[in-house]
Image (tube, rainbow, N blue to C red; front, side, top):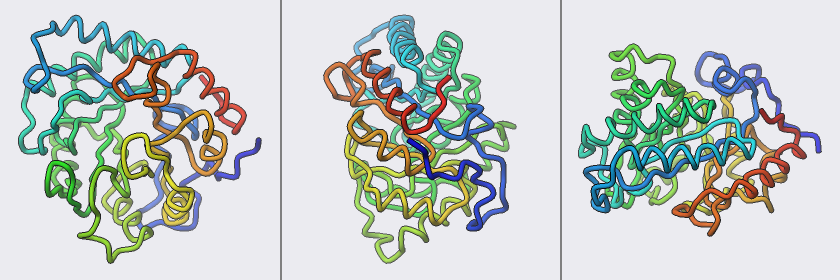
Length: 294
């Protein structure tokens, strides 16, 4: 199945920021990618943490990472998924960055894949600190520009402060993967702005990769959402929720890749264990959509 996506994003005619090298190419060596998510157990300081050793948490994360790697993904994201309920960015502790950095560094070394970091909720600064210490390649920030109302309350885009913090750490190599219509929230504050405008806002605020999602974790991103973001940006666009083996070829053909996790778990839920056979089946569909696997 041939993919209609122009793999040279920087050559597209649209764009509100000067063209730059594709972050996907620079990180993964290919323009079209499948990225798995390591959903970490509760970390120290979070409500569900019960005193497990960091060594045990690292062991879990590495096992998950290897299942993804052996299934054929291009890269991974480590995420503090079990630190529920998620704090707002200003309430995230040093312990989260410290522990997640240890986990991320082990995952990168043992899986041998590029690794990114996503600290929830919207923890841009904490993600950057973690990624720099873990020798990671990128961060995912769900609200990079503008603002919305989330489960955690009012959430503002953190691009201005986060890019300055990244510069302070001399971590300019870290790329930013930013959601355009972030899931788990109301967008009523910016409902008068079109999808194209919000896409351009994220590009203008120097994101490197844009993410299309559904309304919640596991919800499929609408084709119209993916196409709308693709049409309004010169950046690579990937899908960040709701990917399954049933929609993989159709949706992967529209964009530059996907972040996928829940459907690749044994129980089909984010808190399950990664099923290597499901990962391999998904990446086979990616190959049929024209993706080159590692």
